[in-house]
Length: 293
Image (cartoon, rainbow, N blue to C red; front, side, top):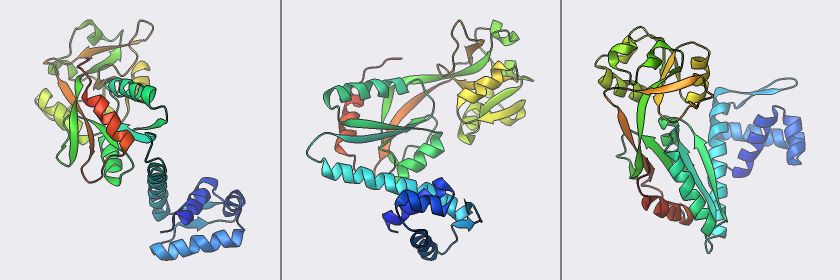
């Protein structure tokens, strides 16, 4: 596939209109339409549903939109690395789920940029499955993965921090009077939990029974929106510590699980793709970090 044509396709997907996309690309509408039809012929699938005023993406078109963006990002990063091979500059891409330990990487990035201000960082937030997929595609240099995760396909270093599982609840909730939350405390309580199967399986071991047997009223992949449900009195959320605002002005509080349930974290990168010079420099800084929390 021609990268130039992929850019054309993305422009059409963003504009939702071939004529407007052609104007944006400084092409004639017939020329752009011909390029798109040739791309559809090459892939053997229709990419667009052409309406009178607007085009919509087919299922194949939605897949290509995502992959095209990743391919173009990789191409741009490769171009920069080649052009700037004699100077320490370029982009380091990091993907992670929500964890307070990301602060360590932020501090490492600040240290690196003090020495090499030409280095930029691109951050991606998502669950473990999203991060792993982008690592395998080469879109990310690094991913931060939380236990339990199979790391056999990656090179990795353990981060000098651990996360603690617990319950996010309103300060006026009856369980807020407790210093910690045990398995029996969860019976009948409306709960929001992670949508990741590996997480619920992990928590089931702590609980001593299937997690699905609890009163699960919803799932989440990132905690911010789930915290709004908790604030509104929908229930409580099983989550990691230090992610939601539990300050004095917040209506929320956090109580750890008991027995304590802590998890380690790893900074991983692909074994199949060599790290760029900026990424290697960043990894060296992170490897030297002392334990923090």
